[in-house]
Image (cartoon, rainbow, N blue to C red):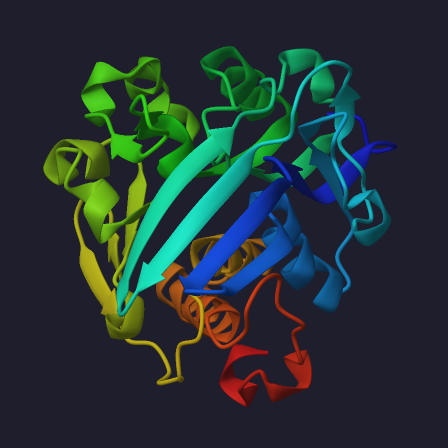
Amino acid sequence: MGDVSLRDVLVVGSYCHDLLRHGPGRETHALGGSAAYIASVLDAMGLEYAVAAVAGEDFRYAGQVRYPPRIVPGTRTTQFIADFDGEDRTLRVSAKAEPILPEDITVDARVALACGVAGEVLPETLLHVSERARHVLADAQGLIRAFDDDGRVLNLRLEDTPFAGLLERLRVLKASEEEARAMDIERVRQRTCLVVTRGARGCTVFTADARIDVPTVAVEEVDATGAGDCFLAGFTLGLLRGLPLERCAALANWFGAQAVTQVGVPKLDVSRLPAELR
């Protein structure tokens, strides 16, 4: 692994166009995507990182990102439409960008995040990432998501995807409770560390021989979009510091909680990070 190109973190995911609908006449257009939310944490913590992302020629937020995506002429940027009805969120994709290719991975990293949101991280790209990074964290949404004819998000069974054979390449697999229902938890935890996020109830870390429930801080939720991305970035901070899994999860919970208190990509005040997590 070459030291010249070694970064703390490599983010392999995309920037998106998000359309958030909170009721009649209440719409917000915003920069979205895993790369944007994760970058908000990494920037706040002053880490050296790189982003491998792809977008269409309609990408409208190039001026808002530190590391712009590769633009594919003649294509569109991934767009998600989120309709909020009380506590429920209906998610639909109305456009999809081209996938991230192995040749888009051009640096080595201590930790890489495979954090696709719409199937843009190909199995061969994930394999290549695992060869360029010491540790790989993956978000299950990028491995199991599919879409129906109307663009609504569906979850495939993990064992029915080509990623099932790559679990040993991962240091951590993060999944929401809904995503965890699309996998055999007992089988997955024998092959990699599985972290299941549970919203206001924190998260649970599953290893081959232990289960660790980690509570989170109480906050007023405004918008849950991107919370899992910020959670994943927080977990990465813990791994970079060599912390035990329980402390990594506590850091992840804190950053995930900050994300839900704001609409869109959060502005993080890390001076509020509890002393025991610094």
